[in-house]
Each structure stands twice: as C-alpha cells, then as structure tokens.
Length: 266
Image (cartoon, rainbow, N blue to C red; front, top):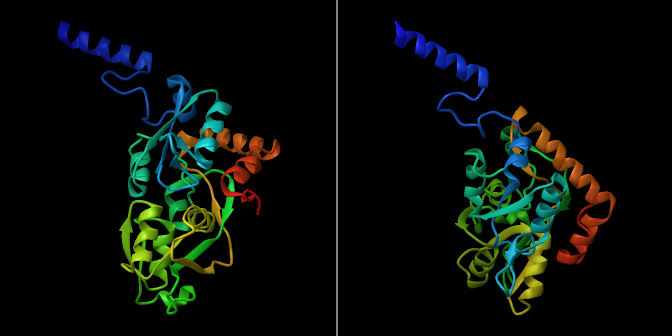
C-alpha cells in the first residue's frame, strides 16, 4: 500500500512541475525560440563549400553571404550563431532530427519543400544557369538535357530540375567538384545558381566552361525550418531580422560584397 501511495505522489509531483519524469526539456514540441534563447545560441547548418554563399577563405575561416546573414539573424535574436557544416543531403536530415535549428544555405523555395518545411520570407532571388564545356555544341538550352548527364548535389533544386528535363544526375559534394566534372567531360553539363557560377568563373578564368542558358524566372531563396507551432515564434523573429536587414541596407551591402550585384530584390 505504501509503495502504491509513493508512486502516486511521485507521478503527481511530475505533473505539478510540468517537467515529466525522465523526459527531455528541449526539442519535444516546446517553443523553439525560447529554447534557442535559453541555450544562448542558434544552431545553423550549411555546406561550407558553396562560394560565395558559404565557404572557407584563405585562412580557412568560414565566410560567405549566408554566414553573415545567419550571424546577423542570431544577433537580432540576442544569441550567438553556431555554424555546423555538412553535405547538402544531410542538412535537412539534421534539422528533421532537431540537431539544427535552421538551414541557411541558399535554399530555394519549392512546392515539395514547402510541404515539409515552413519558410521565412525570401531574402534573395536567383536564376539557374546551365553550364557546359566551352567546346560543347550539343547542349544549348535546358531542353537539350534529355538523355544527357549532369553533376549536382543530391536532393538539390538543380538536381530535380535536371531530372525534369530528362538528364541523369551524378551526385557531388561541392560546386568545385561539379564544375571539374563538366570540364573533364565526365558529365555533359551542370545547373547551379547564376551568382555561384559567375563567381566560380571569375575565380577560375582559365576554366574551359561556358553558360549557355538561364531560367526565365528567379527562384526565391529563404530559410527553412521544421513545420508546426514549435517554430512559429522563431520564424517570426527570423522574418523580423530579414525585414530589418532589408530596411537598413544590410542585405544589399552583403550582396554587393559577395556577389558584386544586388540579388536581394525581386
């Protein structure tokens, strides 16, 4: 009888404290913004190999447009930015498992992604460029990709677009690798963000590559996070930070710094 009463009192105490005996206090349906503030850091996932969005400079420091955007968002919230690098196809898996709070990596908004994630307001607008070897005359537009091979990051918007045009895609881990595969003739073409391609060609003027086509419409670039009430207040805070950066000119300044043009307006 005593044991039964003791267990009942223990259960009542757990309910009273709202902590749950043996449970976890973070990441189990609570408010993510409050959790971020409590731990004092915003954990942001990115590749670190996709210049000028996220990459390492000559001193091996992580830099880039999205690095500074992420750091500014964290400052707006009042916490530090913690950057975690990984391969593209693992970024979203890490966010799904609640290891990361956000993915900031030039992420395009797509219908498929919007079904699974909530997105912030757009903070950049980019077209997709189609790249081939300088001596390639067979691929002059996206329609020519049918039956051809491309190299792209697994699960990326560019991989999906290439497949929609009938190409077979070989997965890669970095922009440099995908460009090298095209130049060496291992694949016929690649698709990537216009600004990233132009930056690569600017950094590698000797590369035997050329852009043969662009998409007509620009893709919206925004910040994905897990769906649901858990992330609602964090999404609001992120949107407030983006609005503040747009209003005070920070977004334009960062865009000019890393891209040489303003990609932050429609």
